[in-house]
Length: 139
Image (cartoon, rainbow, N blue to C red):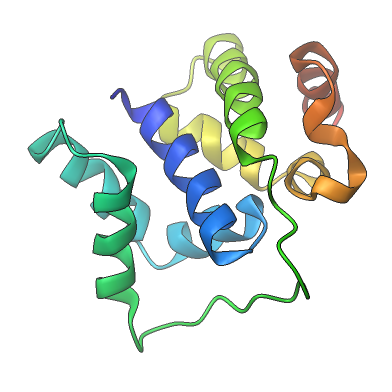
């Protein structure tokens, strides 16, 4: 799995499992350096599935940090659609701005648009990649 696919798939799947918006998952794990560990593990264990990385992060983060779920019920069911959308959008960001996967993810997940796309209730994850890319570019 390439770095961009790993970062986005992991972030969105983790958000789904923990019922936390993907933008919060990404920025929190990036802040504590866990995304670097995920990428390094991806190089060492390229055939592992996402559950391997989820377990690794959960094990390393146990007791060290809490990402609290502020949603009363599962609110991130559109993670598969969101993952496909973000692979396209963030791939475009990387290409246009000559960024690597991590830099492009940083730009996207720290945007206001990412917060809207992360919340199923807004329906932004159903918008086209063109629309989401344009919104990020406006910021």
